[in-house]
Length: 152
Length: 266
Image 1: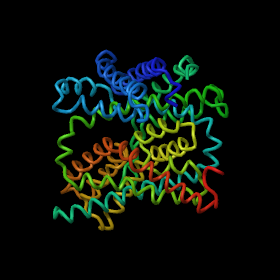
Image 2: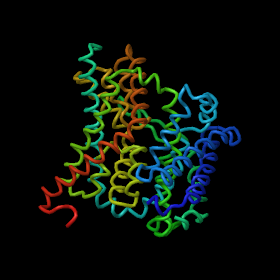
Image 3: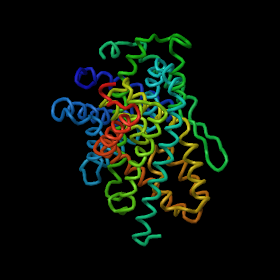
Image 4: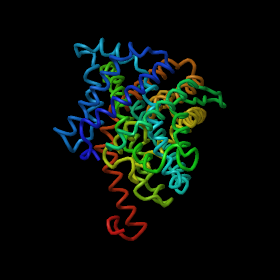
């Protein structure tokens, strides 16, 4: 999937989505477009850096990993510009970023609606088990370790 | 993808959906002990579904495929934000203790239960996408990167992601209060487990726990947030290094068991 996607195309898509996010961020969360611009720019650069690393350096490792890792590094308390980066990025609401993604996803899902109808109820059953098993297993491990350490 | 990039109509409609969704804003209902929270992303998705040929006919089949090629890329911006949420708390999380770190392995348990159930129900490669993890944003992005969201794995992970988005908040709120009522687990253990999913699932689950144990509310919230942040950091690594390879092995094994033939020949 990544192979046939040129870096320039990826950048254009990311810029389009950034603009849509900026508008949504202004409408829904009252963060002005101008004041959110630097934060959005930082996120955009992180993504481009991640995509480029995947494309040119480590082709086998998904770009998501680089994007998250770079985001962590530039906001570590010990990173020199972290306070400034945090202040800018906090202007871009986390939830404002989710809305455009699901808008594209919603349009894309339309074509799978028939398939979803067919396997839909099965996915719902699997989802319920996924949620229960993850939660209960995590709680059980935490319980065991806390007991062992004598914290509870 | 170049066709998708140039489709101005597609981007303009998305912009429209986003603006309308954000104008409606966040709506919360009280349901039993939990809280049902409706977020703009949900409205955007539902309105998006109705743009298809089956409903309002704004988009044709070809344009829907174009849209799906863009989803993986749009997720990256959210992942960048995710990283910047974890960074500032990184050292606090390191101090937060072994329990917090080890409970993360509970996330892998889902595949041992989810994949057999999915295969039993007749799902094929969808099972791997659906049950390798709790299918939140980082997992969707990962599956999108590796298999593409158009693949069977992609459909699986999107299915569970959508179910989680629609029912997750209410489900986690109820699950937490249910388990709290049974007194099997210590509230702190439940609080740490609350961080497995999205921020909204965590909020719902922590909300119900805080209501059940008001005297421990502050610690419960601290553990929940730390655990959620930790999942945001290691979730992707854990899925890529452990959960996905194990899921694929388990899938191949169970497939052979059920259909008496190996996956490749089928």
